[in-house]
Image 1 (spheres, one colour):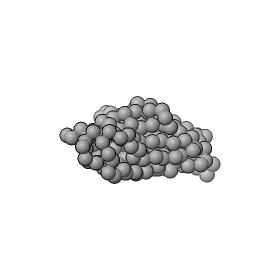
Image 2 (cartoon, rainbow, N blue to C red; image 1 turned 180 degrees about the vertical axis):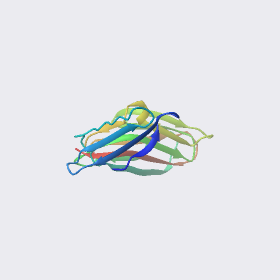
Image 3 (tube, rainbow, N blue to C red; image 1 turned 135 degrees about the horizontal axis):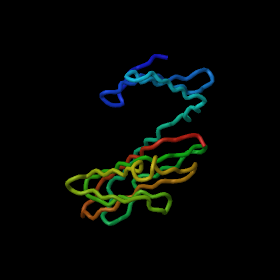
Image 4 (cartoon, helix red, strand yellow; image 1 turned 90 degrees about the horizontal axis):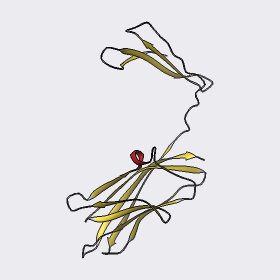
Length: 163
């Protein structure tokens, strides 16, 4: 393993290395080179479970005014758990957006004529994000009050882990 310097602060350069051995253990060595040399080794740390990105996109075209419309439905695949990190929404006019887990409202957000995009960021509000088991459904709905029909889109962002 090669030690690469990085800095804790301007006066304390630190050299560290991270490696994985044949037993799938994570090893880390740290040496503070500005003071007495110290070394720390962490062993037997399990490797993280492989992640699969879950980035899905949906649209609804010609949405009528004052009609709650589902833009996007996502069902967690079998044998997986979804961690929902964020949802991006946008449209051709201002609107009210709702993210639901089945019939339960997770969050609501609005767009305006000045900003037709909105972000639901669940990483900051619920730790790593909302977690959903296989076969659970996330819905993204919209309602607007413009006299003409409008178009809307949504992007779900998160990751899947084997359950």
